[in-house]
Length: 185
Length: 105
Image (tube, rainbow over all chains, first blue to last red; front, top):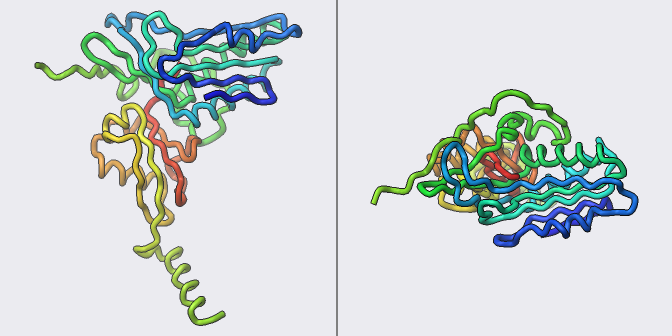
């Protein structure tokens, strides 16, 4: 599912088993007027708290996810001078080493591109209804973003355009840490 | 106004104000991630009376699916693809999503 606006935002939630083609998004944001392209790629890592991760599996409330990514792009544009933005997120299984989320921003100056890129991934983690399940050799668990838990109380209260600077230790979620073990044979 | 149309208008008003038994609306409920694991379904249609809040809908869902209690305190609700407070009143054909803690990115 893809969405493109006058504002040169490319937002894609990719179907299962469709890998992210980063060159496509680089081409999209590139422009002769821009001196900078900043990118972020989130990749599946092989370990979490000592447990071996086999893969991540993603699902999303797609229409709402697209809507909120659009809102995040609008918010980024209100804070920085940007030319183009591309945000892509995979669904389904994403094996170790592969990229699940990719963000590219372009701007005349690098500070805008870099700062906006960081803002966008931080906001995606706090707001966009996408979920990942971490799959281990001996179980699986739905992950919870601390960015979401920290801002949970604001949701529904105001628009998501507020920029929140968060410090401090990661808060443990109510469902986090529970590893679902398969029944003993 | 004829007698017939007055009676039907009066009945509609009674339903709206008095919350009589036949003033029901249908809300589509979506379950994601852990919520879907706990209920065993991705979506369902929930029939509730006029004036019901999202909070009431949630209580009704928890009574149907007690397992949802596990995520009661960390989930949020979305109404028609926007995050919503539990105090919001749901309307006929609204889409209510049960959003467990997200983990995109």
